[in-house]
Image (cartoon, rainbow, N blue to C red; front, top):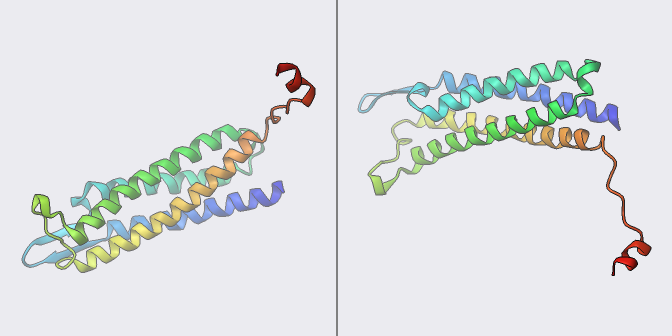
Length: 173
C-alpha cells in the first residue's frame, strides 16, 4: 500500500503544478478594454492578485514536496508534509473564496450599494476569470486529497488507543 500511496501522492503534487501555472497565466494575461468604462486587468482586483500569489506558492511547494518525497531523510518527516499540506489547502480555499466573491459581484452586482454587474461590459474578462477559478478549484481538490494522505501518514505512525476490556468496564460501573 505504501508504494501505491506514494505514487498517488506524487501524481497529485505533479497535477497541482500545471493547474496552478495555468491559473496564473489565465489570470495575469486577463484584461479587456471597454470604450465606455476603460481597461480592466487582473492587477485592478486584489483578490486576483492574492490567487496568483497562492497559486505560485502552491506550484512551488508541490514541486519541492514531490522531489523531497523521494529523499529518504525527508520522507520520515510526515508531520512536515502534514502541516504544509494543511496550510496550502486552507490558503487555496481562502484565495478561491476571494475570487468567487469577485466573480459573483461581476455577474450579479450589488444593488444595495448601487454596484451594477460588469460582465455584460467585460464578458471576455469574466469568462477567463471563471476558467481560472475552475482550475484553482481543481488544484484545491488535489490539495485536500493530499492533506488527507499526509494526515494518514502522520497519524498512522502512532498506535491506536487500547480498547478497554469488559472486565475493566464492569469494575468501573
